Image (cartoon, rainbow, N blue to C red):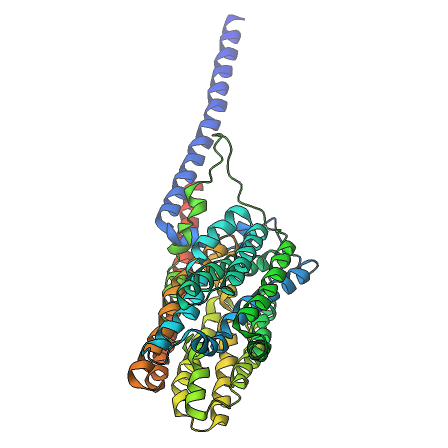
Length: 489
């Protein structure tokens, strides 16, 4: 009995040891797999992180945009935003002529240079504020940011109607009004990604076509108002547009899940990574895009400011110069609708090639302006320029979504627009300076056509860089899978 008892105890101990070693071996295997997984992440580093950003199934697997519904109302509100903000900016050529007469002096040799700063400072500030706007959009949401921005723009435009010289106009119109427009404009781009994904290109085309509709109609409206009620009252009429924009901001109901801030520490301050999103700069494709677009825009805004005065000097003051802005507006709207739809069928970052073609045509058309000795030639140039201007604008947001993903698109667009502020600001004053010194706009328009061609060439690198990144990413994933398979065996 004693021997049987001892044998039974020995067998029990052996079985116990065997059972106890099984979890230990499983733990070791899990630890080995975790170690290999960590090594894979460390090896891939940037590419894996960007892959997460670009994979909507990973980043937003619980969210699918409704592709309509209330989104159509949001689209119309965003359309009004684009129209009122950039319609007024694009029609500044009409206000420019009025400002020269209202505040100018025949003895001032730098008159055009000084006056051009009003419009260029306004356009530049819209983009300069964009990085700050993107942070406010992430923290406060699209609705609050847009409403507050429209209110500030309303105050700036009303204040501009009471000034009596160019100096205060730099502040009221060039800074206050422009900053308000910036805070109202950028949320209108971001909110569309909450409601649309498959139709995002088309919807962006419709929304950005709003500025084309206003660009078509505002020159005639402004010319009539300036003739009948003067510059100050015209500014007050434009303030109504900003009031409606403030009401439109109330429609921006967010749908995307917010990046909640952990409250375990009891702190109400968001982390620095939420305030300043560095992940977007880890994408080489985005870096090229963020530097290539501004490089192309040094001459972009020059025709919008100086074309009206160039027509007056070359063809006479009685020439129906507003027709040119109307032509740009019509074909720009058509281009946004057509190319917005086309962009939905162009896979991934290859949408960039549409912007490359756009910059090439815009640059060539700018150089053609001084060569047009008949007014019909200028009309043809403006029609082509507007068509590809619409293409360039309507696919900015879709490209940003492709490069960094919808969770990071707000700051991606914000920093891009911020970098665009410098060329958009300095281009028109330089053109005005050249006109004051050389006696004509010819050299200014020739030079304005060079930057778009150079910037467009830079953008050609993006698809190649993104394809190379994806290959490297795929190879790293295959290598990691092989290591995990070996570890299991």
